[in-house]
Length: 159
Image (cartoon, rainbow, N blue to C red; front, side, top):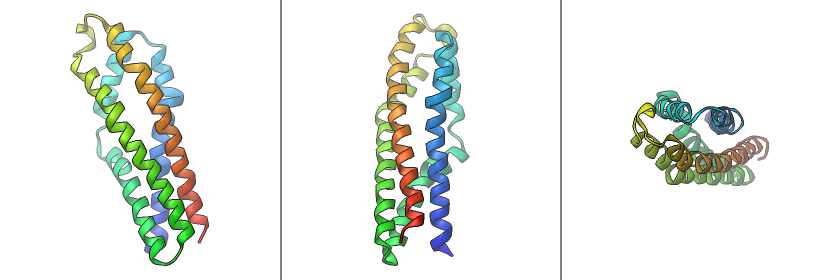
């Protein structure tokens, strides 16, 4: 039973993981890109607070942990092809975590340190220091997450 539940949970969790970054790449950030500087800053500050919730934590931490569990489970029953596909998925997810904590989170933190949007003296400069780099690296997180999803799903189909 565990050899079914864990891989299916892993694929679903990776799908949600990838979907989050995909949504930001194709709708949230382009939408905010059309907003004024203060509106964009205030919205992202709000998103950065709202995203820190239990559902996000389950997906953000659960996806790589579940994929790691898949690597172990598949290898333990000699399903080496599935273990390799899961290993590639895990490597992609780990790369996403590195990008997140090395690039995106520091920009989120800098945006928060700028203070309330209505009190920022030069909102264009604050936005400029945040947006283009954050978006560019989010696109990479999206691609890596989607590759991880494909690998997790392929791992379900090979033995």
